[in-house]
Length: 207
Image 1 (cartoon, helix red, strand yellow):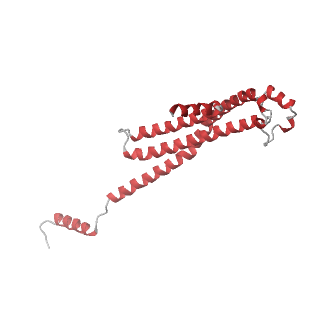
Image 2 (cartoon, helix red, strand yellow):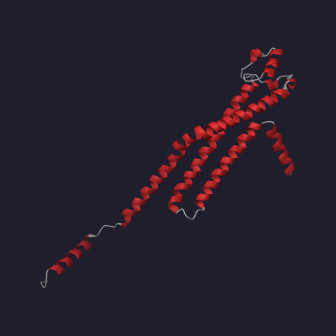
């Protein structure tokens, strides 16, 4: 059972190495987010108030990291692989094959796919090696742009917004509690205080 699962897994990724980079990178972000969140939640040196602020912030931050990485890397990979399948992005050997079969007029068209040609088997080894290489390179470029350019910007704009709102709400609740603890004196209490003061300063005179 386990061998069968790993065999299928190896077979799937051997046909698309770029997909392996995409999936392993996404899993890495998920595990990183989970580890950071658990570390905060189990840290005894962080008080409950800070945890109530830091844990949601870490979750939002992790979600932005995960989705921005997956979406951008997947988009880069899919766009470049589409260019390969339509012949728009190719090498000399594949181009000669297209010229030989009078297919240069179809290069770049969305409905054209080299893999669906009747004689595709003639170019399959060269085409598959080139496509796999493009998949790996495009996935790597997408992940670099995501991690170093897009993700930090999105994290600052999106992930920090909910945490700022939560922080403001917590500060508001703290102020309300502080006001509630400062109960104003009742009129009767003021009257008793005034009478006591009068008796203390009126000497022996009493009414």
